[in-house]
Picture 1 (cartoon, rainbow, N blue to C red):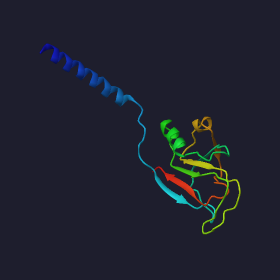
Picture 2 (tube, rainbow, N blue to C red):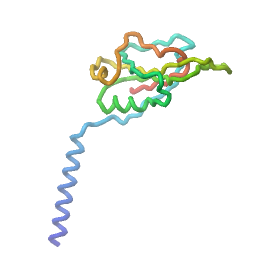
Picture 3 (spheres, rainbow, N blue to C red):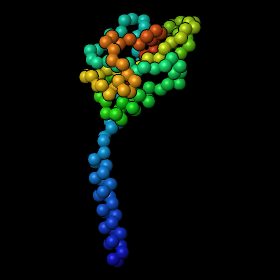
Length: 146
């Protein structure tokens, strides 16, 4: 009986330590953003007021996923309200067309924040005054984090 109560007591202490350590760890938001697909090329697109940063992406990012920077920004505790992503490629097909133009389409990723954050500069972002998704922006993913 003594061994059983000793095991029970040790178990309670371990559970208490785990509970305390979990509360002191940094919390990361698990809220899912809303996603819409927008056309930034057919008509002029108006970005809302804010501070904008563009991720410096190499042109050969065919397999790049926007999930990676979303995770990096969230884990770093960087506050941002919107993220726009346009996949790069080797052709551009306007909506309603059966033909694609053979062009190099640069990938683009832009985030909007309510305030400047210098940590973004060390993560490969550049602050931009006039956000732009570049050429062939007929299909741009827009994630809203509010």
